[in-house]
Length: 336
Image (tube, rainbow, N blue to C red):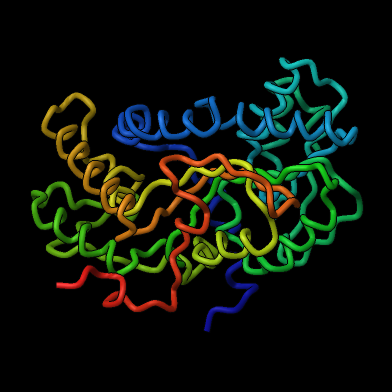
């Protein structure tokens, strides 16, 4: 049996030398064409770093507190960009406290901050956030693709709510699909339909270095480490603990075709490849719109005010984006 300590060791080793931002070129084609307009419609900006910086900076001004926290900061690539945007906006007396488990990533993050000239604004703390306890109050919290690694989400969200200034904000960009980044059954039907149309050469998984043919192998990423360990609980628990001021959600069946595993099989210069991704995104968006499938990713700004008005895209509210894991697939499928 894999123990908690085994998972901790596996998590640290997984990211020791792994490039964590090597998305395939087809992802950038898709995101520029589809994701960017969606995010702009909610946040009036397309840069994730600018969105974090905007809402953290506004929190500084509302609260008079110039201390922010990043939960699971990794090598601080996003936090460094956020610090640069804050400095460009005229904020100079601030700190982003980066809490991170891996000493390897902390070392890389500190070096990155020095190279970027923002080392005075990026403060690292080594901590297992599943047992972390804040000792100060903060104007804002951010979590950039880190929540899906945490087990004790209830405790973490409660601590954030307690440690955040009343007018503060908690901003997060994360995965909200099925645990272990698996597909829900209704989404799997769409994946399988398109998978069967692919040539065998497009079924090569570049991270795992194997062909997945003839059937797509939907495996649980949380089996050894913490990847996606409670992804499906993130959104329900955020709804329980916070209100939302901004919410954008996307993804579903499209994910596996444009992500690090299979996305490298597609070329941005091949019209047939682009047409396939366009078709898949059209189907994915339509299925999201009618509620047949649920999104797998979100970008959200939350507040302690549970009655706060929320800006969304095409009416996709946090409640509509949530997939109840207790509902069997047959009751979600359209009636014949």
